[in-house]
Image (cartoon, rainbow, N blue to C red; front, side, top):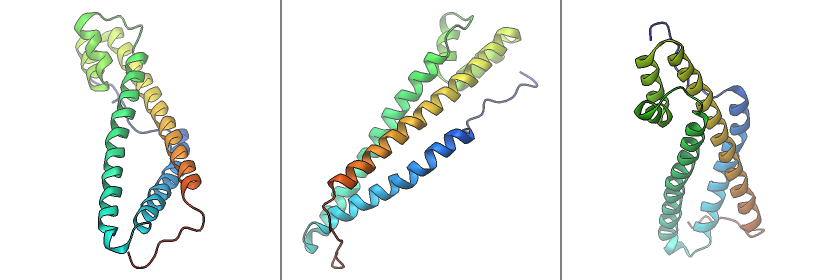
Length: 159
């Protein structure tokens, strides 16, 4: 619709403030766990240990994207309730922000405006929820890493 504002995907300052420290801690946990894994095997097997570490990292990324994407989608869809839409239009609007914008443009008027407002609100709620779940996961992994890494463990220069 002419004159409409786009739906923004930029997180608010509260979300950024909550996730920034977790990103730093998460990076530390990944580095520490990889270092412990590689240094815990003989030097001639360091390459294999590094491959296992990298494979575990990639698997974790894939599972994380799937989990967080599912949470985000479920929260967004749940936030798109109470709209004066039916059938295909309702399914499209609940499916994504782009779908909601498409339905809003097609229906226009007050209904279109309500769809856009619902999409903005639902996206914000989904993004915030997903960010907090991410923080929880990173904190849990960090705590596990600190608890499970043997005390006095040091990476050796031979690796």
